[in-house]
Length: 175
Image (cartoon, rainbow, N blue to C red):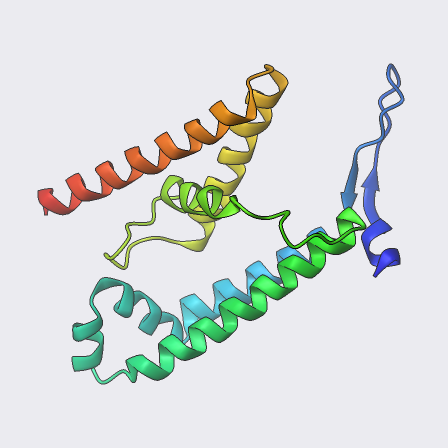
């Protein structure tokens, strides 16, 4: 695990400061998982069923989908992906602390809303969620570089969630 955490794809050096940013090998695993999940969601009945359940559970049930089995399978896959994410985090940070990720739920919700997912509507896409994650992390990094305290960064994330929910509710009323 230590070798996997230290393995890098690309390393570059800043001539002025000597700083060496690295792209970890774990990035390939994340890209592979993205491709697999994308293909499953786009081209399988289970993927279409996930969207159907997100839109309306009763409609998905009336369409003949075994909703309970699909939800159970979805939770199992999400648990597996969370375990892979935790393992990658442990490998790349060279440490494990069970409380390190507390509060990240807020970031996840904000990134999903920034990605255009409409909760309870069955609307959204994996690519847009990835873009939402990248946008949120870029903004958070810039707030950090500007010297804004962590408390206000978390407040910003909360504001993004509130605005995302308001926009989601307004778009539902328009339809």
